[in-house]
Length: 301
Image (tube, rainbow, N blue to C red; front, side, top):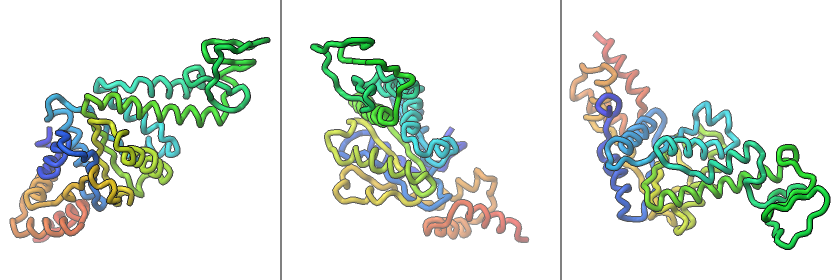
C-alpha cells in the first residue's frame, strides 16, 4: 500500500519505530511544519506502519481536529475521547469503563456514576447509607439514595459537569490499564489554529499536560504523535524534554520530491530542477506551491 500512497520519510519513520521500543522515557513525537507540507499524509503513513509493518500490530487512533465532525462538536472533548475509544475498539482494545460511563451520561443515567445526592441539586457525591433510615418514597440500595428522584427528569447542569469529569477520569484509567502491557498509539493532527480554540486548549491543558506533569501517571506503553503548523508552547518546555522528540521536519530530499511528483504524473524534470525544488521545500515552500510551479514549468515550450 505504501508504494502507491506515500512518500517515505525514512528517517522520521525510523525515529517513530524507535520510540515504540521504549528504550528511554520519550513518549511524544512532534511534527511541526508549515501548511500543505505533508504532515497529514505522514500521519497516515505512521498509522499504516502501526497496523501493517510492526509485529504484532499496534493499536492506533488517528484524530484530525479540523474535520467537520470535530468542528460540529467543538466544545465537547468527550467526542474526541470517544473517537479514540471507537478506533481502538475496532482493533480489539476496549476502554470499557469510559464507554459505560459515557453512554450513561448521554442517557442521563445517574446510577452508573458515583452515589447521587442530585435530588438536593448538588450533583454526584458519596453517601454512606449503611446505617441510613429512609422514609416515604425513598429507596436505599447499597450506598445509593434517591428520594422523589427520577434520573431521567431531574438531571441538572451540576450533575452533567460531574459526570463528564468522571468519564474523563475513566478514560485515563482505562488507557493506563490497557497500555500497561499493550503498546498503543495516538496520532493527533492539526493541533494548531485550524482546530477550535476551546478544544485545542482542553487537549493541551487537560490531556497532554496532565500526562506530562505526572511521571507516574503516563500509561507505560502509550505513544503520541502531535502534528501542527505551530504546536503549543507547552511542548517546548525544558522540564518535559525527556518525554519529547522532534521529527526532522519532513526534510524533503531530492528523492522525496522525485517520488512525490512521479505519483502526481510529473516525470519530465531534470536532476537540476529537482534539486532546486527540493531546496525550496526545505526552506518552507508548500506542496501546493510545488505542484503549481511544476505545472507551469511543464507548460513552457
